[in-house]
Image (cartoon, rainbow, N blue to C red; front, top):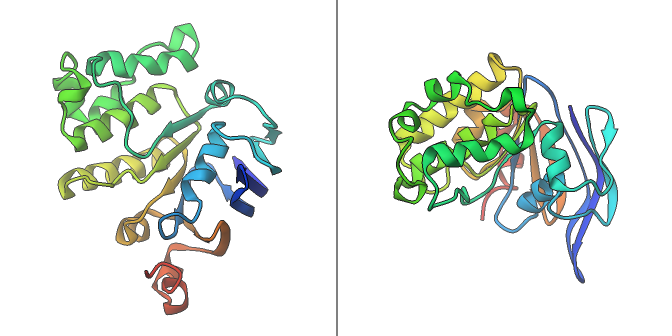
Amino acid sequence: MLAVEGATLHYGAAQALRGVSIEAASGRITCLLGRNGVGKSSLLRAIVGHYPLTDGTISFEGKTFGRAPAYDRARTGIGYVPQGREIFPLLTVRENLETGYAAVKRGERFVPDYIFELFPVLKDMLGRRGGDLSGGQQQQLAIGRALVMRPKLLVLDEPTEGIQPSIIKDIGRAIRFLRDSQGIAVLLVEQYLDFCRELADDVYIMDRGEIVHSGDAESLDRPDVRAHLTV
């Protein structure tokens, strides 16, 4: 579904990515781990089209993006849930969800029922402003907004950050449902090691802008792998 090959990214003179190569397959959860500041979010932003690569390629369903803008990538089926959620605080929950319509055809401009089944609180709060929701509810809204776009690939940047444990469990169940019932490819950046171990089919670890480990979720229990994640 997604193939990143030799991705290199600079912010001016600073280099954020150094020849990164990863893959994310349909019906699988791919988790990207690493300490703060190693380039994980930069890689996601490059994938969704927020920053152009200096070198390397990003391909989706066999098609190389080149310098395609973010809105074109969204229309091909990439949904993005950024770190910090970035919902629209003055819009209602319903209006926030409807912003996802921009990436779909006119006949698909409705909220799929399964979104409210995954996150029933959103249905109860359709008329409430996004900024009045708790942090966990805003995260559910951000995921729901991305799902309105009917993504084939869902990119999530630290969805458990600052979220209460009960909602973390809800988000975990939702991610499993999307993999198992919808066949969506999920690319997940996370700091919460146990969350990744429970969910991931494939894992990558980044350090200083490079991939230093790839394997299955069980490999996270190895001491040499864990050493890449300790401060």
